[in-house]
Amino acid sequence: MKFIRKLKRTFKFILYIFLLWIITFMVINGSALKDIAAFGINSINYEQKSNDTISHNGNYKVLYDLAALNGEEQFGILDFMNVPNDSISKLNTNNKRMFYLMNYLDSIGVKYSSMSVPYKNVTNPTSNIFIKPGSRNEFVLITAHYDILFQNFRQYEGALDNSGSVAVLLNVIQKVKSDLKDKNVAFLFTTEEEKGVIGARRFIEHAKKQNYKITKVICLDGVGRGNLAVMHNSRSGYGLVFRDLFFNWKLFTGSRFVNKPEFSEIDKTVIDFIKYNIKPLKSFVSSTDTRVFEAERIPSVHLTSDDIPHFLNVVHKFSDRIDGLHHNSLKQCEDVLCDFINQL
Image 1 (cartoon, one colour):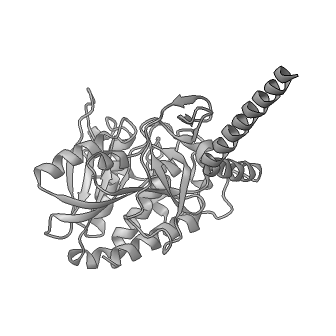
Image 2: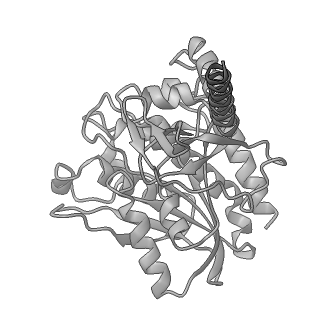
């Protein structure tokens, strides 16, 4: 009898420990479980095509111009590119996007500097495009990468990654350009983000040589679908982060698990999330230029969108098209950045 009573007590103790373990697991994964539930609900109602379409001739016409560069239909590319005719055939899509941005900035009277970003044995390397209107070397930096993953494929538009962000930043620059000399703000369009954030690394090297003091960084990547959000930045890919049963961090990418992923905490000091109605995505991570600036201990945020089902369905896929973006999502980001700059 004593043995049975002792066995029962031992069993109850083990059961209590197990329940405590499970409860602790659920508590520390509260945000992840909540985000998974929201993701599941949103996935049920998910439709790839947008119900808030973007006009071909509206404020975000740039999106269609950039998309047209990724193929043979070049809408009179020779008319706006200051490139010799015999050189056009040698340019890849990202070269064309670079020249398009330079000509766009020229057309609105905004001065810029460019810095070449060599990559392996590439014959025609692309360049970062940097805009620093003021004379002071201390500034807030707002950046977006303009390169796309799949080049010279007409069916690939790279709308969410990252043409939407580029279009927003161009509109912002055009709107605030007359006030920029009085603001400690600069803008950067990076290249080769898709090949390992090489452009951002090159800019950091340049900034150090020029004795720039970058006080904050807002990095736009994935803007254009749903509400404005900020996301953890990861060195291990994108997906959902959570604690396993042994309380170690794991990353689920949608197809595989990654042990002990490296990711940063969301910096709440860069921009006012409450004022601008920006949603922190606590359990989802991605990888973009932000991590280069974070490595230099510069307060940085990755500004993106909160429609995770769309993000996972289209990023780095041929389904990443303009007809999947929301006009109001782009406009929200544009308005927030304009107000943010005006408050500097």
